[in-house]
Image (cartoon, rainbow, N blue to C red):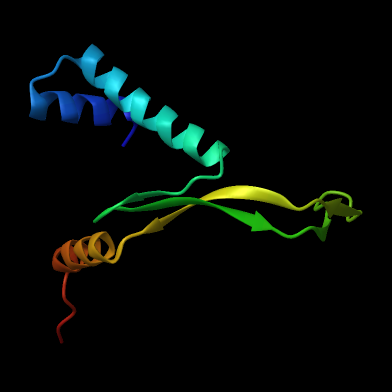
Length: 102
């Protein structure tokens, strides 16, 4: 699903125009980006949380040349799914799987 698909789906469900909906979706995304850039965490109950995590520096290997390269410590954004969402996804997808019977 792309951002355009999300905008279409929300617009159809809310009655807002696609332009208005796209502005809201873009605003949400920008808010998440800005908060993460400032080191803040975002928690959306029932959905999940966005955080940043510090990765230690390490020695890596260039796969093409085999040369060792030092990777400095850095921060990466992470998303952790809530237990509720994880359970709903699992339950729904398990229903769809064909059962194996002898």
